[in-house]
Image 1 (tube, chains in turn red, blue):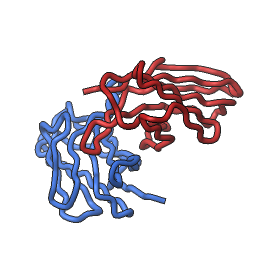
Image 2 (spheres, helix red, strand yellow):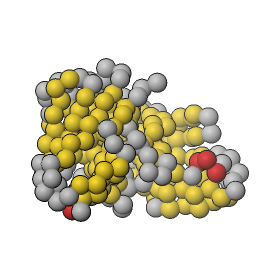
Image 3 (tube, one colour):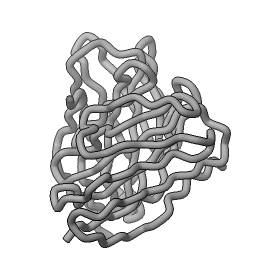
Image 4 (cartoon, chains in turn red, purple):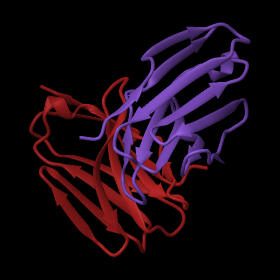
Length: 110
Length: 111
């Protein structure tokens, strides 16, 4: 069962531009997480935002959460070629499980 | 740093073979997970485990089994591999309710 859905499916930008990815989910959550996956590798945790938080920052990452709209966004500022990856949101699925969306493929061109 | 290792990066097996994928974590995490990842479908949970000798079915357990004899090791078993099990397999570990730490993945091809 897929809880989170990322939008857009793919995003292509130039270095230095900002990248925004969105995630929508269906049921109420305790927290929402964002992960990055470089091509052919495992996922790496980026940031966790709890349901009582509205915004969280980590370096060049900014995550917002709107529980009334059941949506979250991930903003990467001043993107670099090294940010090229797939980005996934994940919501808690009960019993410590995570439910992942299909991901957004980000390409950052030098 | 948490380290999650998987026994193989690439594996090619024949239809009908029994396949073992092993995952080891070094952070004494209670929870471990096996996912498969297919294009356009994201990550789908196959099985997970909360403790030694405990296992729970995920969303797509059919054709798979698991074993957790030691806390640090979680094995995924394909009893009789089929071509529709060609996929990327990802193992993850987790302490309580927090983030999951993933291994590098095993790309399995069944011919």
